[in-house]
Length: 189
Image 1: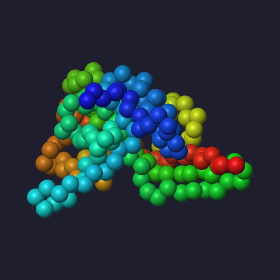
Image 2: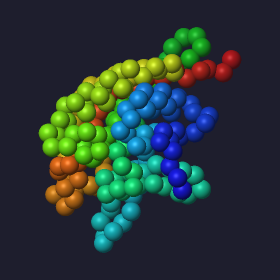
Image 3: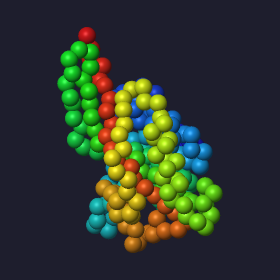
């Protein structure tokens, strides 16, 4: 199955999927990102008696694509993780405001984006932050609160061991942006 460059969750997106879709469009300005996925799911498998949690995007009909650094067919990619809890802030009138913590995980091969030997990760981070801040969010808002680059934080919540895999050693690099998404739920009248 060929994977679209910007793979949105659904055509009839609601709530946070609509906001994430706008952020995906903003990230689309970064030509070196091969794939820009929406919300990832956390899959659990048991291997040799251990539970292994991995991020994956669902394509329908039971098909998942793993979003792990060892999936070399993806190239440079990013995806979103919705954290819990989501909070509903009641509003009078036509909608409820819904807030949720979220993460954006980015993984790249620095050799493919013009960063041959100098490993200028700050330039890549700046480009991602500008793309996120520059996205037109007609369905909500986004705040970025933290940036993580240490291996144990980038894929936090998933079972990916940097000591075993070295997935962030040169020429590879990754980061996790965390913050909050806010969207409005239209109320039925």
